[in-house]
Amino acid sequence: MAIAVRLLDLLWSEQCDAAVVVSADSDLAPAFRAASRRFPERPVFACFPYARSTDELRLLAHRVFRLRKERYAAHQLPDPVVTPDGREIRKPAAW
Image 1 (cartoon, helix red, strand yellow):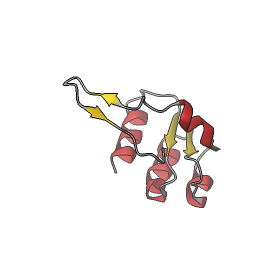
Image 2 (cartoon, rainbow, N blue to C red; image 1 turned 120 degrees about the vertical axis):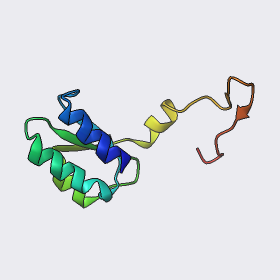
Image 3 (tube, helix red, strand yellow; image 1 turned 120 degrees about the horizontal axis):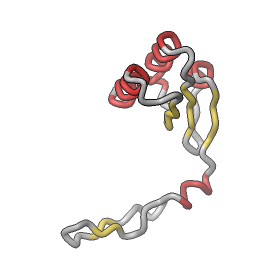
């Protein structure tokens, strides 16, 4: 819900010329439809995470692309992440 509201807010307030939504959640389909109907001149793209997709968003998005598996490794936080109070947070081994 928060992603959908933020997408429409950005478009409505003219804070972007185009938007990229990184998700394969078909629950976002109503927001894609509303964006296309209300702001046809501003494209909304769908970026599907690795090994995820949805036909509904594929049909609604102006364009679709995927995040490749190797891109995840290149953009992860360090392990561990040290918080300002010195606490260490470790990522799961599968990441």
